[in-house]
Length: 195
Image (tube, rainbow, N blue to C red; front, side, top):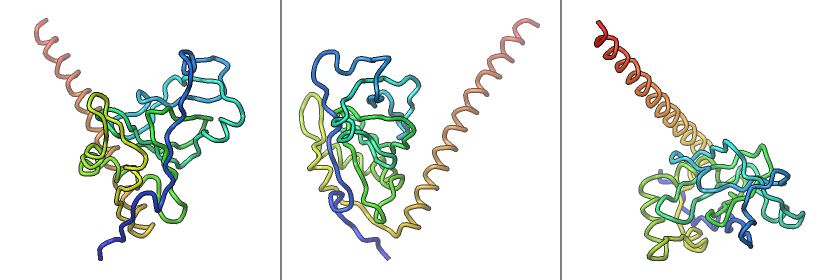
């Protein structure tokens, strides 16, 4: 049985990340209130890797309107890599204007499933085809809203998300194994030269 399809705007709210005005607006402020999520915080696999937060100061109104909530999906909407990640929460944060922030409607769409779907190579090709601009490609929120997404039952979405997470974990383990194997082989070769 084929799952129901819907346009993304029917099952999620999509908005542009925060636009900061002024040359120093995005500069790190040690007394800042919110972390500014930037493209560099996003891995190719769709994980947010925030080693050192870039703190900025926001007023209450802006923080309430633009603050990220756990379960929102961030999609890099500028450039050639339109990777999606789920914001897990943990610290006050906002996404910069390079991102589209997607808030899935509860009970219809699981954030991790949406991340998996958006990061599929076929979806990435579709998104790149919808992007505008010749020098720096940019995906409008309206174009993302028109994207068709399959909506299997929530239990199936969870199973797909878990399988995807296991595949990513396996990939990271294989990369670590390959790196350590290379170090061992290089050490063995160096030792053989000193015999």
